Image 1 (cartoon, rainbow, N blue to C red):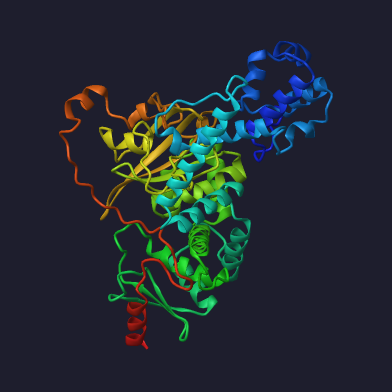
Image 2 (cartoon, one colour):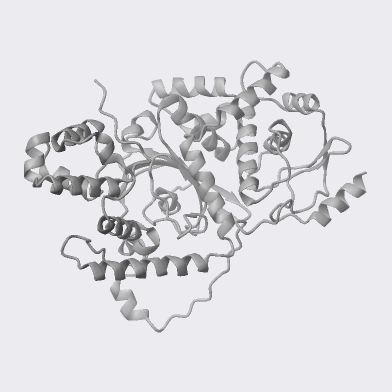
Length: 483
C-alpha cells in the first residue's frame, strides 16, 4: 500500500495555510467543524493553517470538498487578501536564518495584531534585509550564483543524465567494458579527443593544469598536489571541458557550473555508472552501503566516492542525501542537499563560510576518540532526524570532515545505520551552540579582546572571460616557455 503523495515542493506552505484559513472563515466554519467534516484532528488542521505541516494530497482533497471549492483554489500562489499577504511576508521574514540568529522572538500575526503594528514590523524586516544584503554586496553575485547552482542540483537530485551519457560514450569509444578506469584508459581517452599529456614540475601555482589549445597539449603536475586531488581526476576534468563543449565562462555562475560539470564527468569516468550502480545495489541488498567500500572498489579518493554516491543514490535507489565538507574550525567549505537538511546560510542564501552547528556530525567527529576511523551519528534537528557517516582527511589547509547524510528512515541501508550515538541540534536558535552560557558572559564580558583571523574565500566577483584565483600572466609565460 503506497502513501498518499504530498503537495508539490513549489507550493508555499504559509500561503496555503492562509488560503485555507481565509476560505474556512468565509464559510463560517470553526476548526472543530472542519475537522469533523474531513476526519482530521483540529490540531492537525491548525498546523496546516499556520504553515507548519505539509499536508497529503488526500487531506487537501477532503478539505477542498468540505469547503466546496476546487483544490486549485487552495494551491493558488497569491494571498487571499492584502492583510493575509502581509502576514505571509512577516512569516517568511521570521523564518529567515539571518533573523533567527538574532535570537529575537517571533511575532504571531493573528487577528489581534493591529494593522499599523503589522505594517511597522514588515517595514523593519525589509530594512534589515536590505542592510544585510548591502553588507554582503561585494561577493553577492558569486554567492547567489552558488546558491542557484545548489538549487539546480537539488532539482536534479544531484544526477546529470546528459553527463552520464557523455561519459558512457567516451568509455565506449575506447572500448572500456568493465570495472574502474585505468591509467591506460585515460591516455586512450586523451588521444581519442586529440590531446597529448605532458607532466611538468613548473606548473603555475594557481593552476591544476594548463592546456595548449594551439598544439593540443595538456600540461599536468608531475605529482599529486597533496590537497586531495586525484591526478587522474585532474586529467579527466580538463578533458571534460572539451567533451562537454565549454567556452570561457561568461560570469561566476557559468564558471561554477562548468566546475561542477567537469568534476561530475571525471567521477563518471572513474566510477562508471553501470558498474557503480551494480556495486551499490549489492551493498544495499546486504544493508551495508559504505562510502569506504565504494572508494576502495574503484580506487578513488573518499571525497570523490562521496560525491559519486550522491549522484546515484537518489536517482537509482530513492535515497535522499546531503554532502558537506567542513573545516576543523567548523566552517562550511562545500555543501549541498536534496533531503531537506537545513544548512546554515546568510541573507543571500550562501552557505560557504558559515559555521556548522557544534552538535552536527561534521563537527563532533573532531572530538571523537579516533576521528580517523569510521564515524556515524544520528542528529535530531528541527527538520527531522538525520544519520551521517563522516571521514576526516588531512590537508595542508588543516583537517576537513567529509560527511554524507540521509534522513532517519534510510539509515537502515547503511553500515553503521544502527549506531547508538545521537545528538540534538536546535540551530539556528542561538542558545543551541552560538550564544555562550550566562556564567561565561558574566565572567568575561568586557574582559576579552580577540584578534580575528581573516579568511579568504573564492566566492568573489568574476570579470567575464577570467578565472578566479588564476594569474593569466603566469599561464601565458608558462605556455611561452613550452612553445
